[in-house]
Image (cartoon, rainbow, N blue to C red; front, side, top):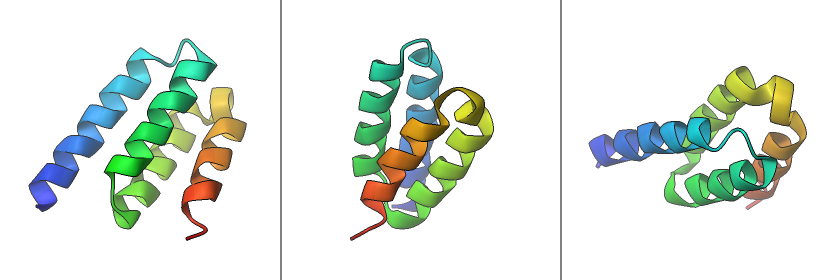
Length: 71
């Protein structure tokens, strides 16, 4: 099971890198990735996104993960 989570995380990173040219696509794919991942992996993805795309999409990243961390 952990292996599948790791695969989903890597796939999500690849997709986000490929769509990072468009803010709407980036947000859409980030929301999708968030739904696929467990709580711990969501935190890891958030940290990776902020480190990788924070200069470009900080507001989108924080908005997407703020919604997911409320539950």
